[in-house]
Image (tube, rainbow, N blue to C red; front, side):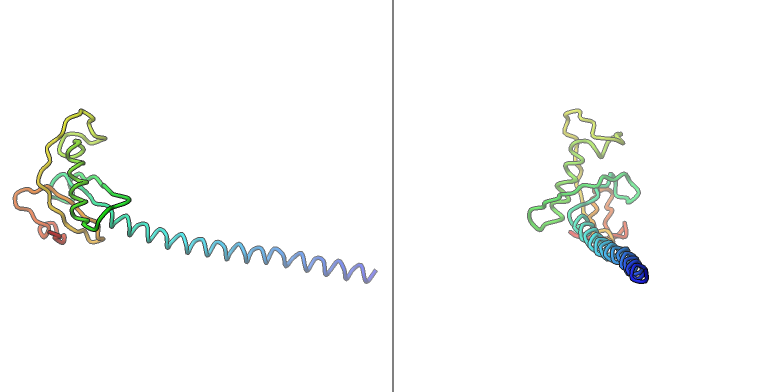
Length: 145
């Protein structure tokens, strides 16, 4: 009887250790996943800022804006790429009209104003139409050209 009792005690001890081991492995896995995920998000957001720009309808940070981006940019000229993307937004009528939603899809080529580019505090480019001599410094932004 004593042997049976001791076997039962050993069996229960071994069983109670298994959940602890599983919990430790699960905890370690969650920690690794969270750390890796956080690093990937930080890298992705930095790349997104580098490859995107905000196109503004007027030379004001409070004006209507459209974010544009190039997921696989070719070349290093971010400023030229931002201007090209924002010209496209103006050309299809997303900016510069009464439209608050998707492009009008009217088949017309809409006028594109002269544009200038500034850098926002987070490094994202901001593209504005030239108007009344407003410059990046007037918007408390850094000039790039």
